[in-house]
Length: 296
Image (cartoon, rainbow, N blue to C red; front, side):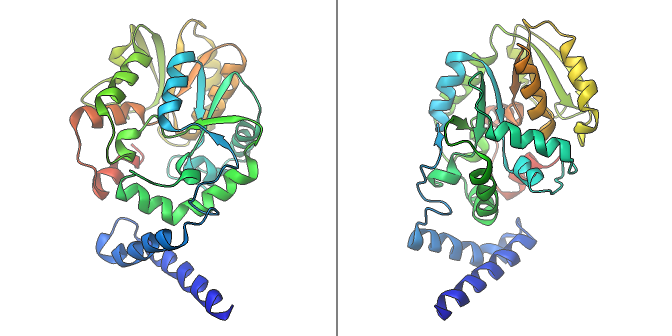
C-alpha cells in the first residue's frame, strides 16, 4: 500500500513537471515515455481504457449521421470542460452563464440536436498523433471527470473531433474525409459567424464550396460578451440558410438556442482550418499543432 501511494505521488509530480512546458520535447520525452508505458501496463478503464458508460459514435459513424440528417450539431471539447470547471482559457475568460449553458448542453436529452464529446477519452488513442496523445495523457483524466459528471447516460453522443481528423489522426482515408466535408457544404446557402481575421490565412476556403455564403465577423476572443447581440443578428437571417459558427465556446449556446427555434446551426470549430491543412498536406509536429490550436 505504501509503495502504491508513493508511486501515485511520483506519477502526479511527473505529470506536473511535464505540464510546465508541454511543447518542449527535450524536457518531456522521458515523462512521456513513462506515461505511454503505464498505458501499456495498466490499461485502466478509469482513464483511457474501453469505457461503455456513454454511447458515443466514432468519427466514421458520426460523419455518416451528420451527412444523413444534416441537422444541427454542437461539440463540447476540452476548452468547454475547463470553463465548466471554473477556469478561463485562451479563447474565453470564465463566465458563469456560459458554464451553465455548457452543462445544460451536455446533460440534455434533446433528440433534434447532435451533441459531441471526446470519443477517445472512452475508447483509447489508437492512430492518434503523438502530440495529441501527449495532450490527452496529461489533461484527459481531468476533463473526463467532467464528462462523467454531467453527461446523460440515456442519450447517444457523436464524436466531438469529427471536424478535425487531419490534426488528430496519424493515418486516415484523407480523400474520403475531404469528400465528406465537401458534401456537407455543397449546394448550401450558409452564413458564417467567425472571429475577426481567423479565416484570413487559409489557402483553401472551405466556405467557397457552398452555393453561397455570407461572413459575419465577431470578436476572436471572449465572444460570449456579445452573446445576446450575436443571437439577435443570427435571428435576422432566413431559416432556409445554415448558420455556421467559428466562435469557440460561444458557438455552443448560440447553436443550442437557434436550433430550438427551428434554425439549422453548425458548431464547426476548426473544420475550415483542418480542411486547409489537409488540402495542403501540412506536416503535423508540435509546432504546427500548437499553431493550429492557438487563438488566431
